Each structure stands twice: as structure tokens, then as C-alpha cells.
Image 1 (cartoon, protein in one colour):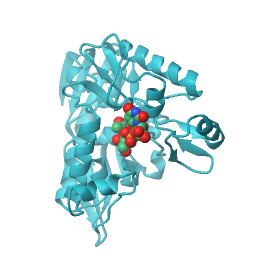
Image 2: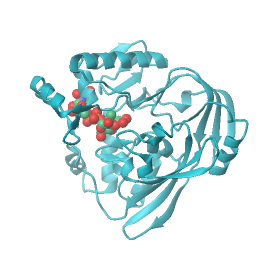
Image 3: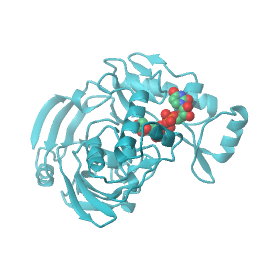
Image 4: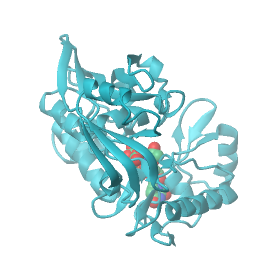
Length: 337
Ligand code: EPU
């Protein structure tokens, strides 16, 4: 393992917020992490696991120790004619894993191309895009309990997955550090193309194949979402809120064109981007933070933004949307104070 002290977190968060952590520890294996958890280096300190920091907003310096996984392997652990089971270290960059699956004709992960972050963090956040969520691929998550260093496996149902949510953001938060995930992918050709106009976007680009689907997703994402190496951001800043069908009926009478995603008989999800734009907040600037003018769901760092400037802008947006629609927006981004 490698321990660094009084370190800038600029390379560890895609928002580009320049704060410091007391310590940062990189671990390279399960044993490495086990030893670190048992040692005085970690013991008694506040800890936070950070991958690429693509879903975090640091609001202040971090008083404690950041644990950063460098566990980097992809291994086939089992397979049948139909499925392959792949164990993936928590430090593997998620999109490298997607490319690996595409290269090997394993089906299921391609719609999640180009989502930033490490695999461990992706399984915490239940990342999703274009009709697929990672929960449909997760067989098991392997982690170490922080207080004891004892390994624990979480089955898919034990992960309690929900929209951008899991047990690792709730009861298990800060209590377990993920070391690897076992994914189940299909060896039989199949695609998820039902999301809005996605199928026609793929067809426009040629014959249906894993690489074509991946390329399509990459192109769409690059058009819509700002490049974090140029403009600091954390992808969607807010979750798409749930709205009861009865409230939705009232809104539809007022806004005939309101877009929605059906959930079940009781709820629909509304696109936060649309609500924000209709509330007049698209493009809005507060200090060095801005609601992105090409996609209202994203907040960007215009350069040297402080975490609390971003929070202030987010709160402004939340108030504006609530006043207009009586809908509460909840951040998808995790604030770290
Ligand atoms: N819209 C606006 N104004 C805008 C942008 C969009 O009115 O500035 C409207 C669009 O017209 C559309 C609707 O909002 O009707 C939805 O927009 P979009 O299709 O861009 O997708 P989204 O619902 O905003 C979600 C995920 C993304 C994921 C895409 C594609 C959430 C919070 N976001 O966005 O995930 O990539 O679908 O599947 O669920 C992320 O989590 O970081 C992320 C980028």
C-alpha cells in the first residue's frame, strides 16, 4: 500500500474541487486493505472510500483518511454455454471493463459505456443509462468490514438495489469497503435497445453489434455531457424525481408536453433536466458554478469553484423547482463535508 499525507484531492474528484485530505491510502489487494484496516494508520480515523470521485462533491477539506482501491484484475470465475461470471477488482475503471466485455462478446454491459468511475463505486451507486442498471449484472459484491477486516459477500438481493441506490449508501455506508464484484454477462447475443430513440440511433450507425452499440452510446454521451477533464462536473447532479400518478395528472393539465418515464401503477419519474429548464435555471451562474447550458441536469465547475458554491446553486435550483412544480429534487451526487 501507499500512504500519502496532507494531499490535494484535485485528482480524486471529477468536479475539480481543490480540497485536501489528511491522508490518502492506496491499496492493491484484499490483504493489503486488511492489514491497513488493522493498523494505526486507519484505526480511529474517519474513512471514506473514493474511486475516481465521479459522484462526489467535497464541500470542505476531508479530516480523515481516503481509501483508494488499486485492486486491478478481471478474472473469469465460472461459465456455461449461456453465461460468464467475471470477478472484477474494485479499482478497475468501469469503462475498461465494458470494453473488455465488448472485446470478448459478453453481452449486458455495453449500454453503460463511458460512465466515469471505478467498478467498486459503480456497484455502490447502481449506475444506469439507456435502459440498463448495473444491478441487472451484479451477481455478488465482495467487501471487507472496516472494524473487523473480515470479508463479507453481498448477494444481489442483499445489495438492496434501487434507482441510484444500494445498501452501500445506507446501512452499510462507511462500514464496508468493496474489494471486487462478480458480474454475470450473457454469451448469447442480445441487446437492450428499448430506450427512447436509441434503436434508431444504433441502426443509423450500421449493423447491430456490441461495438456499434458501444460507439453509439459513447457518441451520445459525448454530445450531451461535458468532458470532466475540461469542465469539472459529476454527471447528473440530481436524480430524476418520482411523482405520484395523481400529481402527474394535475401537472399534465398545466404542461401538456411534460415528459415522463413510467415506473408502476402508482408512480412516474420526471426528468429533472426538464423541470430545471422550465424553472428558468438552465445556464444559471452562481459564483464559479453553473447549471450547464447544454444539459440542465449537470452542474459544472467554471474554474476554481468551491464545494459550497456548487451546493448554493443546487439549493437555488431545488427551491425554484419546488416553487414551480411542488416537486423535491434530490441530489444524485454525494456531498462530503
Ligand atoms: N431535457 C430538458 N432540458 C435539458 C436536457 C434534457 O428539458 O437541458 C429533457 C429532454 O428533452 C428529455 C428529458 O429531459 O425529455 C430527459 O433527458 P435525457 O434523455 O438527457 O436523460 P435524463 O433522464 O436526463 C438519465 C440519467 C443519465 C443517463 C441518461 C440516459 C438520471 C438522473 N440520469 O438522464 O445518467 O445517462 O438518462 O439513460 O437518471 C448520471 O447518472 O450521471 C447520468 C448521466
